[in-house]
Amino acid sequence: MSDNTQSPLDDPQVSPHEVAKQAATQLAEKTGIERHDIALTLGSGWGRAADLLGETVAEVPASEIEGFSASGVPGHSGTLRSIRLANGRHALVIGARTHFYEDRGVRRVVHSVRTAAAAGATVMILTNGAGGIKRHWRPGTPALITDHINLTAASPLEGATFVDLTDLYSPRLRGLAREVDPEFEEGVYVQFRGPHYETPAEVRYAEIIGGHIVGMSTGLEAIAAREAGMEVLGMSLITNLAAGISDEPLSHAEVIAAGKSAEGKLAKLLAEIVGRI
Image 1 (cartoon, helix red, strand yellow):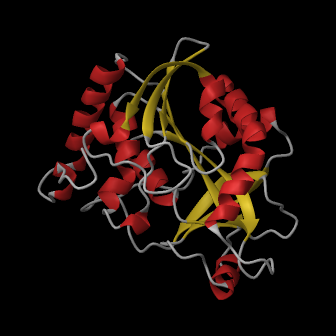
Image 2: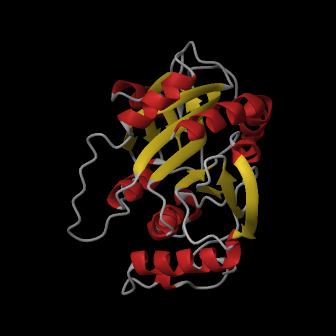
């Protein structure tokens, strides 16, 4: 599927779950792996972790799989990568995240998660680069997501689909992460629509309503993962202090630079966590 090609996902009469099953079938054919046990979406700063997870079995351009497009954001690989872990299981590494602000529709945003579930994954690890509200955080700080606030005014759930989000971000998986790093920071993630960065007033609002991390992804994906029955682990790389918390202007170049400087540490951290799941 090229970026300009219509997908069945764009037809409201077609079930997005059926499209995910088609995508999972294509993925199995192209990778030679019938089932993936764990899936990871690697956001800004987290991409190098794939190299430490295990043996890469196959790497497929995401645009060759139904419903996917090449990533529209610098710093994302645009591929789907199958990795054999040390314990013999297989991980699907998603480097082709579709953001809500790309205006492809919520179905496209969460298609990677639904495809991972259809491919057999029971654990979904969602990572991102984001702005931090806690004053003591510095660029390069990793933080566990304990909960989220969805300010996109959208949901991946369709019709009368009611899903409990009480413990959306798995306490068990966060516990495993803390075994690797007992000093892991944590906070509530606030998803804005983007693509503009938040204003200082919006950051103050996010803080008042209980947020600690601001970004433009993850929340909608996590909801879709829960709907699919997956266990979710969310982690943010704090690439910068949010607008108004710091006097420095914000830029995507800053996000990329912070990710590059932290990627070695993040890769080792994430690989150790996956090894415990």
